[in-house]
View 1 (cartoon, one colour):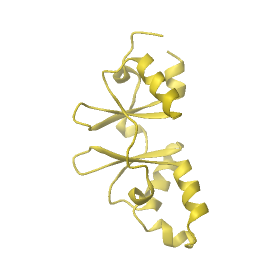
View 2: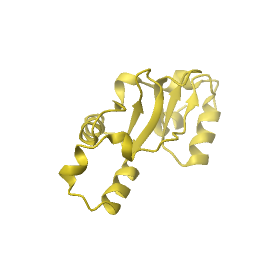
View 3: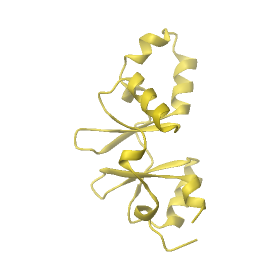
Length: 130
């Protein structure tokens, strides 16, 4: 592929949906809509990645909960997110990023530091242009 690393290819944390552990589902949806992406990364107070809320999580929520939508929107988004998010270190190669995305069938891959601090995300379309 190329000699590029995840750190060369990632989207900066200011340019994708990033929410806090205590943020509501409504805030997550607003952020996902603002950036036009189908996911939101969730971080704790130390900026460590603790979850990813995806469009799939939202579909499953709507199909399995009988609560009215307004009642769900005030709950914490983290409650409905994947709690073991797939991520990759910033030092990983572009080939490694692609392999992880294929293995786990994800199109957006959070990039973390060695301390699991969220520093970016790689979108599949950006990766295949390498």
